[in-house]
Length: 249
Ligand code: PEP
Figure 1 (cartoon, helix red, strand yellow):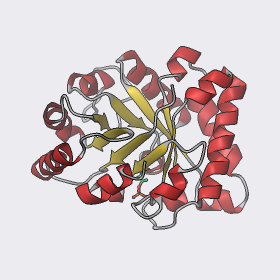
Figure 2 (cartoon, protein in one colour):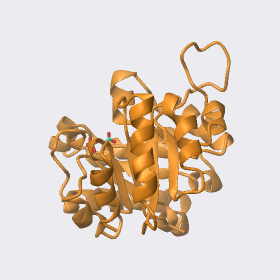
Figure 3 (tube, protein in one colour):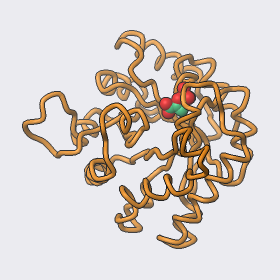
Figure 4 (cartoon, protein in one colour):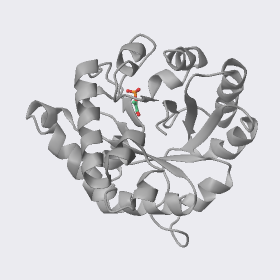
C-alpha cells in the first residue's frame, strides 16, 4: 500500500541538545498525523532521538550509511549500526552526498543493499541539476540514477524503497518546482517503475518531493496524484514549520 510521508532532513544542523529539544517539541505536537512522519537526523542524535520517539507516530532516519558492512573504514557508520540505534529509515543518495562526497551509482547501490539487509528502509534521492533541466535532460538523468542504483533489486526489495525526487536547483534555494513540474516527474518515475517491476509495485511506491517545500506550497504539491509527500530540509528545523507541512495532508 502506498503511504503518504512527510520526512525531515536536518542535514548537519543541531547539537545533540538542540536536536533533543526539537524532537521533544515534535513529540508533543505530532499526535494524530494524517501521514507517516519521519525525521532524519545526524548520526550522533539517532539513538537518543529514537528512544525519545519510541511509541510515537514519528520514525527516525539516518542521513547516510556506509557502503561497506564493517571493518577498517575510519569515521564511517554502517547500516547495522544505524539499525541498532532504533532508526527505521536511511536517506541514501542525497544530492549533497553525490556532489560533495563523490557518491557514485555503484556506491549507492551497495548502500541500498546493506540498508535492506539490515531491515532499514532506504529513502533514495534522485534529481537533476539546473543545467540538466535547462537542457531538457531531467528525465534521462533521473532514469540513469534509478537504473544505476536501484533497478537490479528484486521486486520485494524494491517494494521497501521510498523515492524522493529532489531537483537539485530547488534544494535550499527557495526555488520550488511547480506542482506541474513535480507531478510530471513523479508520474515519469512511476512509469519507469511500472516498466521494470509492474503496475502494482509502481502504484504502491511512495514518491516524495523535496526542494524548498514549505508550509505555503506543501498543500498544492501534495494534492497531485503522484506526489505522496515531501522530504523537507530547511523547514524541518523548526517544529512549527514542520508541523504545518504535516498538516498539509
Ligand atoms: C533536502 O535537503 O532534502 C531539501 C529538500 O532541502 P530544502 O527543503 O531546504 O530545500
